[in-house]
Image (cartoon, rainbow, N blue to C red; front, side, top):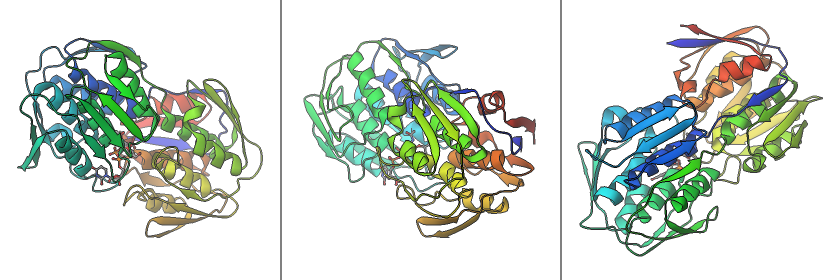
Length: 418
Ligand code: EPZ
């Protein structure tokens, strides 16, 4: 197991490039199952979750080739429709193969993902939605077995909560269903818009991109297509917050400022100077950090995936910040680790009250989940002294070359064997 060692207090400068979005690449890869013709994806990030997803697709008979950030996927021959527990338990996003496999093959056997560090992560909305399209779902031995005689039938699916992967699963299944499917209370994250673009390029009939109502006219077959993976807004936000925490000024490049409305507003309110370009954001910290309150919400609200990171920032502010986590039930595990670095945070149910102390001190800490580990990196960059972050495999799931990118921007950061 590796650890990351950071010597705090070194200002960030220059350019920090962002890779393709993990949470866009995964559904785009799942979409290859819908067609017998090759799909070409560009700007694919080099992440552990992408490699895991490729192993999963291989287990269905999918052939692939990756050259740098270009990935060609060929699902012309599907030899299995079963997603094993061994693979699914390491990555919940595996559930994204359920809709496409069922729509293309009429059957799918996918292990229930099980919970993860941040919550129970049920998939009831996915299953209820597929049943509305005619799927017969059975739960047995920890697997969901979905099957349909002939084609899925279009129907109306209304989500209780705008589930991101739930919307993606139903959207993909509906593209091959017979007739019209209406998805109401759909999630509006930009990653879903990226998937809509790919599916339309494959020949799907979809209206309502980026809205909370998607209307899909099913077709018999989908053909091959090419699609660029959108920039990772969570990676971009993580680096913007890092500059705010340690100070300095830098430009986050290869990103889309339109995808971070809530974060940019909060960073400006915290006193950072933010200048938006076409595909870049210039950030500078000139004066003291002001405390701001945060409430995580579905897009375009403040992203839950940036909650841990902005909490690290608020520990360095000049006042009190209330951070409410409304999406997941257990997403404060970074608090105990930030305490070890001197942060003053009190958790009260789904809210954390952060009393900014303006300073943190380096300490040995442990990553517990993907975004919590990013929060510890941000805290370590600003802390006095050295911080050792263990279990960085969590970080490798969702950050492409974070050590290389931050070190090129002036951070004293290195990776070592534990
Ligand atoms: C996606 O997870 C992201 N993952 C998560 O990113 C992100 O935190 C989350 O959306 C919220 O934005 C991918 O896109 C691969 P949800 P997802 O379904 O789709 C409840 C990261 O760090 N719910 O939108 O699993 C659920 O428990 C990861 O990159 C049900 O109750 O999230 C949660 O409370 C972490 N039943 C809420 O809805 C369901 O069937 C929103 O979850 C589905 C969800």
